[in-house]
Every structure is written in C-alpha cells, then in structure tokens.
Image (cartoon, rainbow, N blue to C red; front, side, top):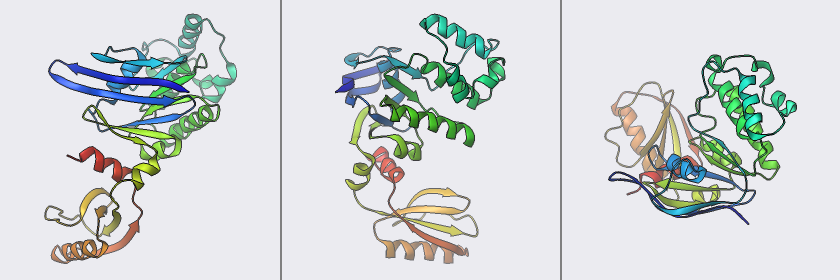
Length: 285
C-alpha cells in the first residue's frame, strides 16, 4: 500500500524550471531518502508534498496524517519552550506526552526562551512538535544538518524508533551514512528530474564498477594535471580518488608525488561507496 503518490509534478519560478515531470511512489512503513545537490529541487518537492507550495502541474496524494520538520524552522524569540508546546497542544487539541518530553531532552529546557536554544535543542524541539499528534507520515528535511555529535545521535535514535514502529518517513539529507543507515529506498533528483530510484545497494551495484583509493601525503598536492584518477575529496591531507584501473592510478599518483617532491605516507584501497555513485549520477551529463 502506498503512503505518498507523486505524479508528473512540474514547478517553475518564472523562466526557471525547478521540477520536471517528477513521479514517485512511497510505500506505507517505508523510510524513503531524497538525495540531490543543492538546487536540484528537493526542498521544492517536499514543500509541494507538505502543501506549503503549489505545483504548476501534477499531483501529490497523501494517505494518512503528516508531521513535518522543515529544513528552516523558527519560533518567536521570546516564546518559552513550554509555551510553544502548550500552544501546539491547544491547537491540535491533544494531551502533552510527558514521557516524550524526557525522551527528547525537552524537559530540561522547557523554561528557556527559544532564542537561547542551541541548534541541536531547536531541532529536537521541532521534531517533538512534528510528532506531537503521532502522525502516520513524517517528513524530515535535513534533520541533522549543523548538529553536534550528541544531538545527531539523539535524533538518529528517534528516527530508529519511528522506523521500528512502522512509520512512513520521507527524509532529505546530504549525510550518506544517515541515508544508508535508515533508508529502504532512495531517489536522486538531478536538475528537477528523477535520475535514480531504488535501494542503496542497487545504486552501487547497478552502475559502472570503479575503485576508491586513499593516498595520504606529507604535504598538499596539486591535482590539476590528473588524467587517470578522478579526485573525490580530501580530509587532513588524505586524498580519495576514483579510478577504473588500480595499477594506472598507483602509477599516476606515485609519479605526481615524485615530481612534487612529496612523500606518500599511506595507501588504502576501499570499496566503492554510495557517496561516489551519488556524485557520479549528480555530475553526469
């Protein structure tokens, strides 16, 4: 049974087309991930599903009650946490679940003004309010962006609990570990269109096989003249490259290090990753 059916959605802002004939079906009880680079159209699609924004063509059908955590949410600076919660309880005509206040670490901040909360505390409050009426479907737009480690762990715990209860969750995220951990299926939005739908394993297995190799150097390197290895990312002078021939990649990077008078201090061959496959699709012409 489907919880969300998106059919032929189109949306433009003036002459700029943001969504072009997007169709998706999200099953009841499924955790569905929405991926795409900034500007791909993810947030616009979520806002249409949520009813915040109208589409130019097509439809979004929702089967069940919905709770939403927006990518950018805010409350009045000088409203206290407990005042906001009481307001939502009155609005939704429901009782406050005091055990959830403790579970979300809200109890300890209920007398604080919203403006004085940390980013993590605000995100926890927003999620608490989104789940206030025990909705069937939860939509999360970048739920852990900008959070510290402990706040991320707490939010991930809540998402796991929602998943175990059979809730339908639609989550947009740039965090590949988050996507792999929770999502049953994913869709990649590229330039306003659906470029891929399937499981994370299908994304990795059903695309061109390549290798990831990490090289750690004792100094920064100039990568402008690479021809065989494709630069992926750099962290603390450990560079990750994608290639289709390991020997050729080793030769090219070794020659680069020699010509640059830089030492290679570590080499690590790692498995192909969801992140690389996503980048490959997102950048494909």
